Amino acid sequence: MVNYQPQMTNAGIHRLHKTTVINENGESREMALTGERPLTIYLNTIEIVTLMTLGAQPELLTLGYLRNQGLVDKLDDIESIQVDWDVEAVAVTTRTPKDNINELTSRRTVTSGCGQGTMFGHVMDSLSDLKLQCPRFSAESLYAVLKALTEYNEMYKQAGAVHGCALCEGTDIQIFVEDVGRHNAVDAISGWMWLNNIKGHDKVFYTTGRLTSEMVIKVAQMQVPLLLSRSGVTEMGLKLAQQIGIGMVARAKGRHFLVYNGIEAFQLPQTAN
Image (cartoon, rainbow, N blue to C red; front, side, top):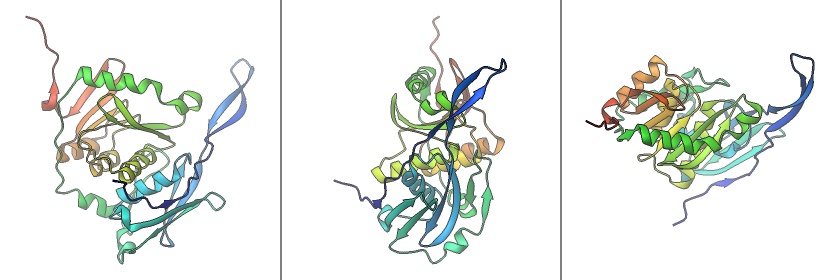
């Protein structure tokens, strides 16, 4: 069965640029620069937000943003997503515009996301009764995921200045997205999941960025029960993960990691007597 697909442009743009720098010895070298463009989302002609993005997957970013912000309820309600870089905007048309769109977007919180993310107030309200079950996991399973991820982060290796996020099923990296902000990368993955009817209950979500309240909220909306990061954790992020039941593993680099939440699901290594 083919999932419903809205009409969408395919307007991904080149993400790397070149510049000449000199090092501490005055020696000249060519370096890669990460691209960054503003993209304003219009929902049925109403301006919603302007995101700073690499521009690699603007349609998925838009789709995931609208989904995670609760501004569109069903995929098949979206008629089209049209990106036009000449005006640095994306026009989204739905079949049944929400009557309360101004009310939904009136409570806006600027988050700690790189590139400055936003979160509308009603999103937090919708998570009040959500409960997820952290799956069993072990050091070996986490090491396997981290090893599988080593071939990614291509943009970061060349130019830096980006965050990467991945949706993993076992050691299978289903999708990996890099963008200037982790909130953009997670939204693009959410859009991809929505477009392809991918469920999150048996997945692990990986990010290079901090595990903030915004990241926990977005992953919770995707129904993913285990969150893995090479960076740190904020107090509110941990509190929300505990409230919802999301396993939270951070500072994951090499053979080191710290389990912040989901300790009861962590399988300790077997020790010989």
